Image (cartoon, rainbow, N blue to C red):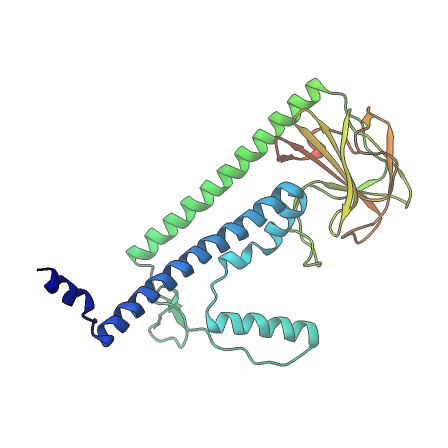
Length: 292
């Protein structure tokens, strides 16, 4: 019996089978390594985005509103080609021809001839088209209701702040850009304005609109030289300053001069960008202060 066992131990596995088993194991290890790397890579990317949001929420919100369309863009070959061609034609006056994008079945419009007339008219909408139109109308109504609710909540929060704190105008001048949706020729400027812009001469004094503690004094490419003043769950931002006269950690009261007006950062002229947030939600400053 012992001799039989020794012979079995000394038997060598067929080299081809051994090679196949080894290759199979190598493939499994490679797949596992790829999976682990992909998971690690995703964690790094998401972690970086999260840290960016925590470190500079204002810049994060701006870039999200500016570049978020990329995630929703339908990246077909024809669409991408035309997008690039349009940019080159506009920026460098090239004359690149655009490609025809085939219509989807739902986008195809058929026409029928009128009797004794050379013109064409659109087909009468089918039952499916009516359903689509009803869904679109419902969606639009839902969006409008959310916007109305958002502005109602904003007014409620503004009234709570006015009841609890003293507020003053942060500077003198004219409101050059109000809160909310705006049209801008500059593609680097977000189409939704998170605060209001007050324009005046270079060096105009900027005052604390409300009591609080200076939580951040810094600068970036968008807001330029800026100040953040925190009071409980309320954050006020003063941006595009030419000169800052306070330091982080200082306490201020309404009317204290904290900076001077400028056009640092992404600014087309001398002005103060004045922004108010409560628990991270933006509030129209004109709900809080009369800027007339």
